[in-house]
Length: 403
Image 1 (cartoon, one colour):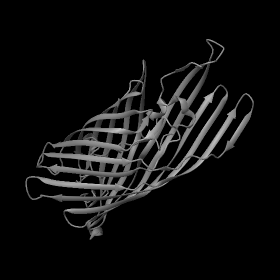
Image 2: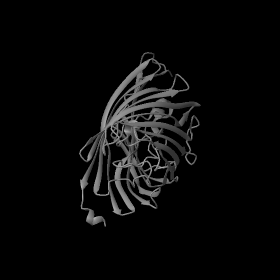
Image 3: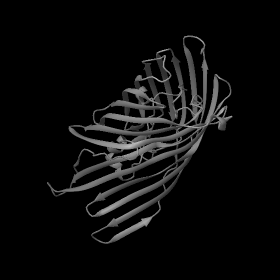
Image 4: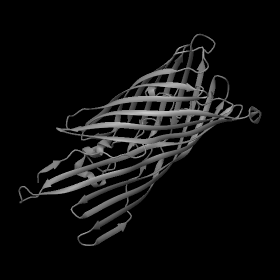
């Protein structure tokens, strides 16, 4: 049987995503849900233009979601809110075929405040991962040259994170924090061939926790150094799975539960270092994600641990002012946790952005270009351009309430 593939047209969920590995493994499409989908690289925020760095950043007007300990510099006389949206344009290449898609979605909402003089809190919601693809194949019918049967494979959905962060300033230099929340969502996959449709729907839930430390030193000199450390344990994901089969030509229908392998959130370990001068903020992050508790039912695919390195910087245009415009830039390099038939997938990204003060608020814009680098030409090639727009604003409260 000779098989031809048409280029995928990728869909979107809450955050922009393409489950590239699914698009590549067309031999096992009906049940090829790999892991939890594509993890969200970051949820934007005021410093989205700094290349998804922030583990060592603890600054006024920044609701840091990358390190739960790094929120102890927020304005103590405000409820601080963050609202963000994103849009992206992606272009995909597979052999000699090309396609593209455009998506736009909200991607961040959070609120932070001081509970007590040394106790700070943050409540928010953001994407955790997403799945979105449409793939059409055509197969030549054996014994009937020139006649084809068509199949359509679709996947939608994703996981979203709701969390509560508590941070404690143990001293002016040292802060610790804990982030607790839930990850939940539904992933739907379907295969349509002629008049028959098979749909797999999986509702997933998991408890989520991470811990952070932030430490500053040298604050009395010309330079201020800071370091951060975060850790998130690997936790199981519960499933509620339903398989639905329907055939419009024969009125056949089937609806039943099905079993799938246990999946786990990856163990995450991250560290960051930053240096702040009168005009510059420079930072570097390293993130390690351990996927070893997850296994694949397909011999052609395996999970790989991820290593991500990100560098970012910000230039303060008017350092003598309490609030100043900042210009940002960053680069990053990492690998996918999917290894398909020995083909490794990596990516390179670059970001630029700016943050503008508006009274007690900041309007921030970040632009990111991302290029997927694959070890073989017969794997999907992806280029993506994304925009993040974020508004950070404060609602003044009485200082007497915090005493």
